[in-house]
Length: 141
Image 1 (cartoon, helix red, strand yellow):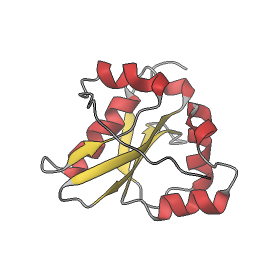
Image 2 (image 1 turned 30 degrees about the horizontal axis):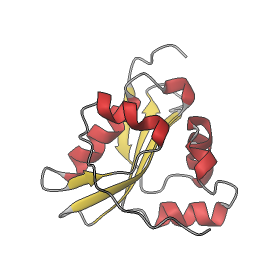
Image 3 (image 1 turned 45 degrees about the horizontal axis):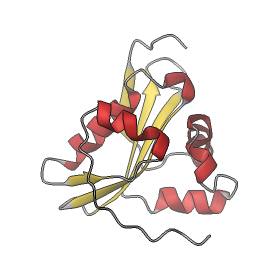
Image 4 (image 1 turned 90 degrees about the vertical axis):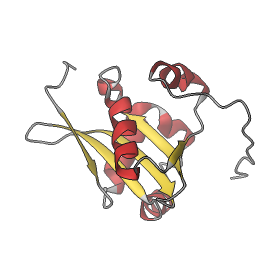
């Protein structure tokens, strides 16, 4: 893919579940998400507090990225999915999604995420500080 002239970022609370799944699968993140379980994926979207999308600024408005978060809009936000289609990786879309998420949250809200091991370098490159102590009960299903 050639570098897009522009990417449009938006709060998109009614994102289509199939479009969401397509980006997850195309990004590689779909391997760790229940994309074959559409009702569960729909529930993930319905219960999210903030869904930010990245679409190419062209007539078809192709979806190339999604940031899905759970937040109280006051103290903290957990960024549970940051997915960028493979064709748009390396174009700044992931950083743009994080920047737009932070803009919508405002300066009083901290942003927390748990990185997949292969994505740690990306977060370090965009200047997101690593926190050494995190604890996690993993899902059993």
